[in-house]
Image 1 (tube, rainbow over the protein chains, first blue to last red):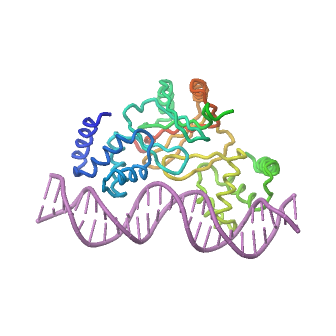
Image 2: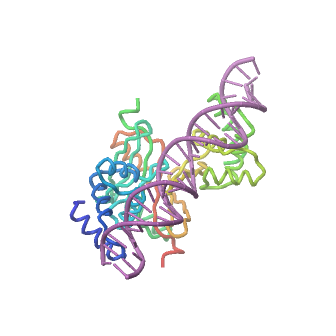
Length: 144
Length: 144
DNA sequence: TTCAGTGCAAAAACTTTGCAGGAGG
DNA sequence: CCTCCTGCAAAGTTTTTGCACTGAA
């Protein structure tokens, strides 16, 4: 998602939710966009500290949650006990292949996945917001 | 999985891996089987303490990992930063619907899921060990 | 002016590690 | 008898909370 568009979306979201528009929140947003995919809250905090930003850990955590609610970011978690975030620009139908050897993450897209989700949700009388589909194993570089 | 069968499987696994067969490990196994699905290591530890067992936290964590390697249990994680375990008796093709309101977990089975996994893995030249498929949303009791 | 948001540090929640003593093979 | 395993507590990681101050509306 482009920076300006994300800023606008976040502003609207903050106003609607009666949250205040603060420079810190937009600093976090900017670093999150720069940071690319699959970063953790603490990664981002450290990155921001090194990048001369003075935002506190608490604000980073708080803001990332807001960005998830606002659907600018998506929350992920890959079996390690920490939360990853990624841009939700094009997250439909996309899952992750996680290599147990190198920790690498490959994304995949498959339209059939959302068909299945629709089907399962219907059968179980459930209302879906999001899903995660993680496949664990070994990538081609590390399977002998 | 039945208790006796699990004991036997675990014994074989321990012997092959040159791990010792200790009463503590089988206590953990028994509580894990009793505990049903989707418990955390610490839940189990507390449960064991209340249940007059004297096994330490470290042993519980350690043994659960062994039970995962042995494929008696499977590791899960649902977006909260903690690890859940469940019996892997019939985990093929099975995913989870997680209600954001009540935290309830519904399991689903769908043979098409493993077809898709096979397909994706093939395309990406990846070797899959396991997958998790979590759908987040609201169950029928909590969507108005 | 007012109160939500902030920075900081302390606490909390979950998990791992180090060590000395004990028991399995 | 030699290690591996255990219990305990301490330390490690990641995230949340409390508090006094600040700044957005």
